[in-house]
Length: 413
Image (cartoon, rainbow, N blue to C red; front, side, top):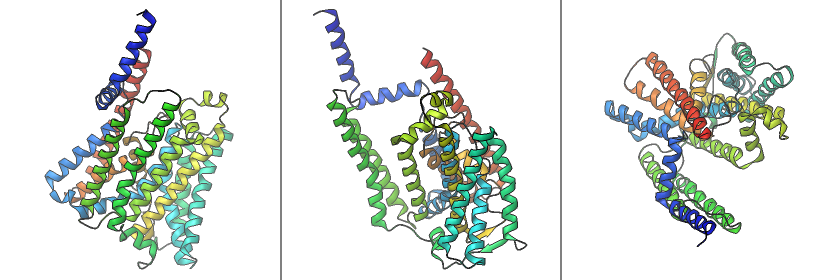
């Protein structure tokens, strides 16, 4: 056997050796060693948080308490989903909390004070968010104003406008019998629908994976992992989701509001991973000048990211108002900004741009809300929540920085 043929046989042997579950496990270990940690730190963090709070107060993992946790996580989760968009470009939006508070004020004024239909109030609030995002992007594109400065100015301006709209009373109560308030406080999915929803992700992974394998075979490319890994992923995910749904259905069930948030995460994930716009987002965040030279319209990408961020912040404000059944001066203040940005970073979106995922918002807000919920059950002060959340955020940034250094050194090697 000649040397080129022997080398080819050895290469084929390595490909076969890497296929299957064992090869997938070895590949995962190699990625972790190279600094590609993925969602592993967040999953381990959630397990640790749940274990600690459950040991201190078993009510933490009670089905009804978890349902309340999901209700509370949806509003800030939507805001965090928008933050992911601007962070992926290496930018920041410090006004998402104020935008959410202004949106809740607009909702209360147009719906309750003016007596107009709530659908119109929601549309105006969302439009105001899109407009503010457009303003931020224009200031960045036309005048080079750093997003840190423009959004900080926007934070102050929108806070003042929120106070002006609410007037001397400082709050507007929303009708308790309205569909919007019931959506934010009461409505949960039927059991049969929640089980169907739990089966869907695994089925999609299987169908899309089989289609990908077919297309790779058509162009004579190997399929790392093979069918066994694909089946294992789909089965494990489906089993985990079914168990979670069954457990939550022992109490109130899964809130529709959280289901809306998850739907938005899925749609954003599709847009980021399977569309030209998503590829452009990663390219601009990774290297803006290289993206521009390759023909990407950087200005339009920035406009779309900031408009999405502010629109989702407005939606978060609407959901928060429905949860509290009121529009008040306190809406969007306090730790809303901190939690929204921290959730995106803790979930795995890089502050340095070019790396992130829509799922970062979901995982990150579950971490943040779990800490808040657990400390509340223990009757501990909010000061501890701030300190612990800040510590978790610092750890997440350190992990991200170390992972970047590891990937860079691994790439040079």
